[in-house]
Each structure stands twice: as C-alpha cells, then as structure tokens.
Image 1 (tube, rainbow, N blue to C red):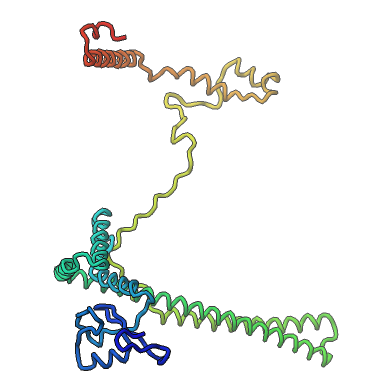
Image 2: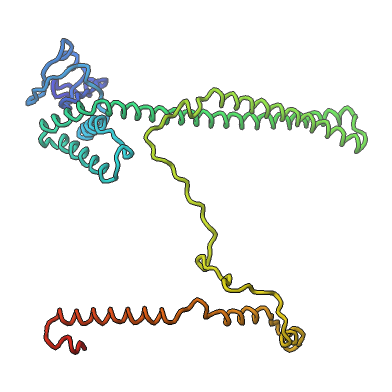
Length: 348
C-alpha cells in the first residue's frame, strides 16, 4: 500500500514503488509524478521534511529498506575511503584506516553524530580529492580489465566448444563417407583381392587425413586471428603500486648432517699403505672371507693418530677456571643480597 495515496496492488497490479536515498520513504510511481514533476518538494510522508527531487527516485533493490540504506551508505563511504593496502607503509596504518572507515559508516547507519560525521567526510573528500579521483580511476580500470578478461575467457570457451562440435560433426561425416565409399567399392566389384582391399582402405585413410588436416589448419588460423584481435596484456592492464616480486629461494637438497664436512683437514687418506701386516691381512682368508675392508682400518687409524691436533688443553682449562670463578662471585653476591652477615662465609 502506498503511504501517500493509499493505493494498493490489489486494485492496480502494475503499480511500482520507488524510493529516494534522501529519506528512503517508499511511495508509488504515480505519487512521484504528481508531486515532484514541477520541481523539488518536501517528502509527503508525515514527520519527514526533507526536500526530494524526482530524478533521484529509483526502484528498490532489496526487500528490506534497512539493507538498501546500508548498501547505499557503504557505497558512498567507499568512494571516499578508497585507498588500498599498498598505499600504506605498515599493515597497522592500513588497519587504522579501515577502522576509521567502519566507524564513519556505523555512525551514518545508526544516526550517531550524523552532522559532524558528514562534515568530517566532506572535509576529507575535499582535502584528498586528487588521490580519491586517481584511486577511483584505478578501480574502474581494474574492473574494466577484469570484465574484459572474463568476456575473453567466455568467448574463448565458446570458440573451443564450437570447434569441438565442428570436429565431432566432421569426424562423423568422414566416417559416414568412408563407409559409403567402401560399400560402393564392394558393390561395383572393384575389390577382388586383399591387396586391392588394403589399397582402397589406404586411399580412404589418406582422404580422411587430408580433410582432418585441413580442418585443423582452419581452426588454428581462426584461433590465431582471435588472439590477434584480442587486446594484449600491455594494452588492457595497467597495474600500479604493486610491491616488487621477490623470487622464492631455490630449495637446497636435504642434508642429514646439516652441512657438516667429514673430509679430514690434517691428512689425506690413501687407498693403499705399505706394511707387512697389511699385506698379510689382504690375503688372509680368515680376514677377507667375512667382508672386512682394510680401508676402514686405514680411516680409523689415521683418525686416532690425528685426533688430538687442534686441541689446546691449557686454554680449555683456563677458560673453565675463569667460568667457575665468575659463578662463585655471582653466588656470593646473591647471598650478600639476601642478607645476613654470615651469608658470605657459608652459602649452603
């Protein structure tokens, strides 16, 4: 029912309701034409004194008028607060920006300090007009590029489907033609031997292959023409403000020893050493029969011989005494800090 003229859709099924984003009061199209055709006028709903214009009336999108109002307010605020994360130096600054945007939207939705919020929003829009217009242009460009990409993908999918259908129809036609040619050949009694049968089949296959090759060549030419007519990425996209892309480091091969080297630094292990006992061990069946390798003996003997090099016992003892002295001083200091004259004499 129209709140102005009290008309209902029961008597007028074609009646349309319109809303104005100034006050979101719903009224029928006839009342809008009758009241606002001569110019701006006050809202006819009781208790509302807002001045409305006919060109701002539009059809209601959502059934709930609250959702309609919220969508409009969020769209209006988003046109002013249109910065992206790459425009800020830190993530915290960007989150603060989003919080300010949400607080402004909440105040306008709930009617909290509407006049002050509108003034702040207008002042911010005036101060940042160049950047706002630039960001809006960038967003529109991204939307247009996305729409063009989606349309190109749909067109390519349609071309692929149509090409597959044509290929299927052509294959069926070729199969039917081959079958008809074979039947005609048998009918005319032109095939009288297996050699003649194989020759006829070869001719049919050549014709079929030639037709298929021509169809594929035509399809490739059509796809190349489509790719040529489609705008390139450099002509369609222009993305600005993106962060530098850093290539991921190449994964190294897994090392169970964490890069530790087992190559000896004080000696070079030889494959053969001259010694009477070693010569006997190389030929003794009781030693060789079990699979023992003398290279293990060479490695262990050389390691034991050079294991003590690079170890300076005096320096290690001095560092140990120095560390134990620092620990004793710290223990006595803690005992003195705890209180008591005799604490320093016996800390246990």
